[in-house]
Amino acid sequence: MDSWKTPNWPMKIFEDWFDPCPLNENWQVNGLKIEWKEKTFVNPPYSNPLPWIEKAIEESKKGKTIVLLLNVDTSTKWFAKLNESKSHFLWFAERLKFSEKNASPRPSMLAILTKEDLK
Image 1 (cartoon, rainbow, N blue to C red):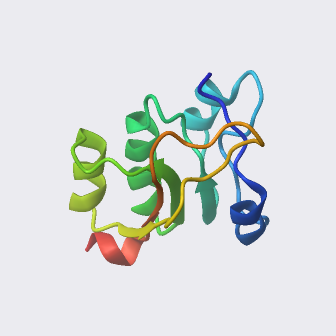
Image 2: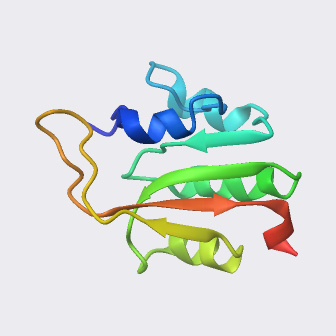
């Protein structure tokens, strides 16, 4: 399953932020087609974050602040795109628990994009 609820403690930090991919049946389609808000938090599917990262870069160029919750994987095309876009990376010291029984199989990070960083 590729649809996991973000743990409560990070969500408290971003509780007033727009979420383009909440847990529902249409999240993968609609979240990529709609306009994102000035402050957007995204927990994209870990199996295919690239379209969400491309959308985040596009939205950040409009002056928006976008935060993505992602696996740490510096060997991927999507990480290279974020790095080229001068994203800021915040690494978690522990593996996030998405439920009582399920922890992320890899370390996680936040990638933060802002228009100022894309200059």
